[in-house]
Length: 270
Image (cartoon, rainbow, N blue to C red):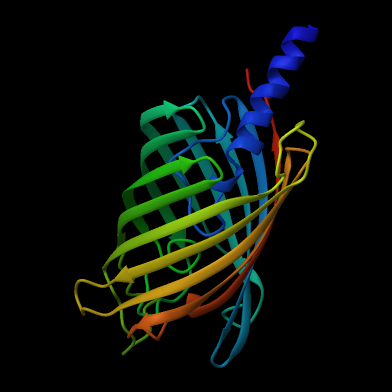
């Protein structure tokens, strides 16, 4: 039993301390959470746009079925339409199909898909399947770990479902959206790993972009973030995204902070 416990702690430490710089704040890496584990997240997003400040809360449950397959189940609540209410939900799944491992480095490739539902009226140029739109999304993500630096790129395509009953007359209604991102994460602390109880501190810089093929409008956001991991199980994120280039101004996520708390429970599934 003692050997099993030591082995489990080594696995947890390898995941949360060796690869913490892959736990991006605004995107998902190609790597998956540990097998037979469950994670619980609570995310708050605040958007500083006209006519003022609005916020969204996202409760989330994550399940690691095995080393290649994981799933997220999300709910969305916000005050964007005058009062705080439940907007909808989303199911996200990711399958890792390639792993190339070396000493202190690895390369991962994964495919992901998402299906979302939302009862919000559609009146922005963006397609956001995490609260604002109903639709489908699919794509690929590639992640390279180089000791304390992790780099990741994502390419996705989203299709929004039409809903004439909720569409505001005269407002834009994009149908398809190409998304792309480039993310970097660096493990600042600990300088030398000694045990799994050491706090981890990571810094991130992510570039998040989208293009509407129908109108040609696009944007590119810069998103710096910081992250603290405690006792290898508790994660706290804080980040902010702002537009650096583009002409897609009518969207909610243009100026947005993100604050998240995450709690992980390992080896809880049979």
